[in-house]
Length: 223
Image 1 (cartoon, rainbow, N blue to C red):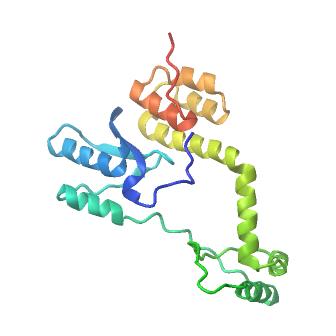
Image 2 (image 1 turned 90 degrees about the horizontal axis):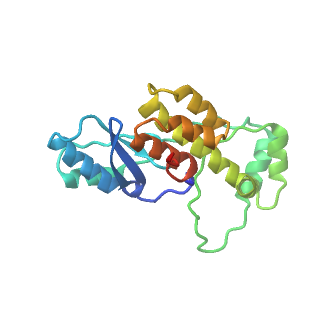
């Protein structure tokens, strides 16, 4: 099963799959897939080809203009989606206490930043007060809480995200195919046997890809 939380540092290396209509063209790292799609499009062997991110099922917008070198350069320069703007916590003693505790976190000489990203969150005053009393301050406490939640909910989260990725691709590639609504319900009901039976009559490239996103393996073929 896919782990959507783990992605390559270079956007050009993310695993993806390209479809021309309901026909699979190629699967692999985005760099290779984009170049093959570009070549097929340039010589008229592919129409409106779409590239899907294997991690989340979203369509990857690739600019195929120019030379192959220019296409690859743009892929590596591409940034991830902008974070949703947050709302700053209300000003007051609780926030001040949390910020003071956080800023007082001991830092050794030359301590690495560990890739920390600053964003805003909204909490109730009692939450900020509790965080401000924790060793290391609010940021350290929040990181510990997040890591604990990830460990506890890791498998359910992966299954949910896999179903969501499969549904995105289903909606794009199979929204007009017979059994789509029933297959969607079976997918979210975690009824794999019924789901695979319902998508069994779809084009094999589509059913295999959707099943792989949902369950980590192509759909079982009926004998």
